[in-house]
Image 1 (cartoon, helix red, strand yellow):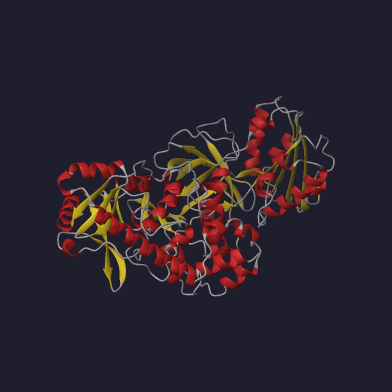
Image 2: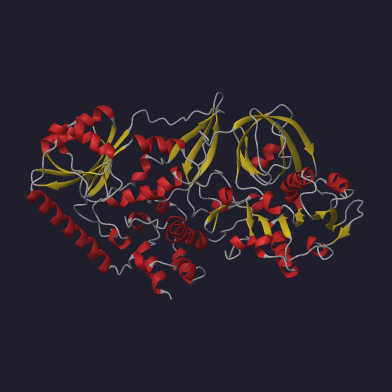
Length: 345
Length: 274
């Protein structure tokens, strides 16, 4: 059982002010009905509300950045250019699951990606409960809850005139010890309030799942192998425009390409996001392409999430965040694709 | 876990020779600034500064640490730039990556090597390894095919190998357009006289996808075991360290788990020959 504390609203702001000294801090904030990460500074610290639902952009952006210089000239040094460690406030349960995939790929799969590891290990993750849900949220279908249970340093739930803080790591515990005076013993009513809100929010996600008839993960076994040559892929790929929006908003998509730039003085190797939907993605020398048709590339995206990662690491690489549903201009809805795959015997 | 500090960083290498092999294949001999130790069948990523990098399996002797060679067919942006390289130019090398050939598993066995076209490059390195460990392998057969006699990679070297007592070698081309004393036809037509026990023998195949497909079918028909067939798979290997996603083949990344695969590991994937 993790340590639990109560922190008043004022003390939370004090805590954040303290963090600003050590961390480059980003906080989830609401704008026009959606949540976005914004830089936290002394000015906006007064109006913070890092709850609501998952942010528009995935958490991976901070660690596996869209564009990173990964090597310069022939030097063995790591050019990672974030000078200060990161503190992220308001990461949600779905994005924390994204860490499972990104950490496996970039830190625990034979080789280590140096800049990812550096950013990740130095970072402080302060997650928050979801207090409302979007129509497209379906995390519970993947076995998650809309409140974090792992992969955070501290987690915050609103309660009474303050917050319940749960410690999730040694780093989180150290922070509590360092600022002991801000952390109080929680009262039962605070915990009851937290648990009751969590239950209400979870029921809202479950209602999304019921309304949209989304199968749960226990029925995903074999859906790719069984449907490998199904017409579902061609049918769904009809409206795909190969834009790669689903890849960029996905908290688990990790594919990239290496791109070399050279000016007069320096050679820079960039690691930039890539999209498996793009025709050239798997193209090899002399023009051979293992996935020449768009439907094969769409299938590849689902194969990675629901077959590959399940086989190599025993989890489905989808978090139910629903970002790809909203991002797709072709209205390819992952919930519908999963349903069709599960239902097609 | 591999302890390389920055796996994206190439080390410097100087081009010490450029050998024109055929109309569209050149061999680049390089001297790396740090010693590189590779297992035969492993590959490197070769950087042309400012242009980009591409994967190649060295065709030189693995036992030589301060020099390596790659034979490169001109097919795209990076390979065009490689063909422009001159003695003294600086390039970058990352690697070696991948698994390479399991030499230990080959010991004491009868081995058939089937090569096609540019696939001779990795196989040359493998043959050097066999020659260096003469006597450790029961019997060696080499069967090589190419489109035309004029563009036969390493032809003079292969014809030297034909004189070796520890090797049974046969070559063939689809089309004769220069002096040619060997067979005519695709490579699968010169496998029938290979005198070995197919059920316990090893077959190593490297060449263009279409040739690998038909060679595999033929070898299975002859009685080779699926688990004794070693194939070099071509996929878009970019990062070399199993992260960028481009070279996935089923549950494997070709760059990390390959590029050499036993046929039984990959046979159930429907698109391995594409």
